[in-house]
Every structure is written in C-alpha cells, then in structure tokens.
Image (cartoon, helix red, strand yellow):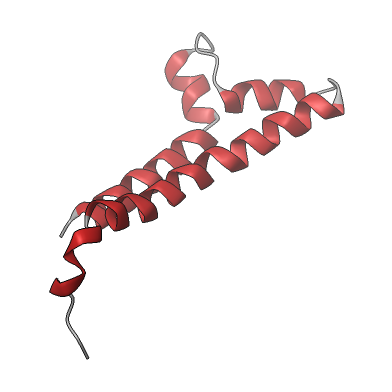
Length: 87
C-alpha cells in the first residue's frame, strides 16, 4: 500500500537533489563533479549545444524518476485489480 507514496517521495528527493547547486559546492568544497555543477560552469561561456544537453539531462532525469514512481506500483500490483473498491 505504501509503495506508490514511497516511490513518489523518492522521486521528489531525486528531483531536488539533481537541482541542488549550492549545497554541493558548500558541502563538497567543489571536489565533487555533478550534473548541476557542470551545467552552471558551462553556462559561463561554453558551447550552447553542450549547455542544452546538460539542461535537457537535468530535466529528463527527474522526469524518468517520476515516471518510474508512477509505473512501478502499477506493474507490481497488476494482478490485484479485483481488490480495488468498486464505487
């Protein structure tokens, strides 16, 4: 019963962690390379196509997490359709 809420909470956590720039810089002291830190550093003057790829990845990764959070419970509980409450 809690699979869907747990997966959605994990997807929200993943989406927030993908977008965290300052905590990555402060906590890691700039030693860790992440998608967000690379996107911010490239935004200063790199090739626009590369920046576009990084921005697309930052949008697609959380989208994948949310799609999985919605699809996995449907797949796991596919045989339990008769247990739904008929209104």
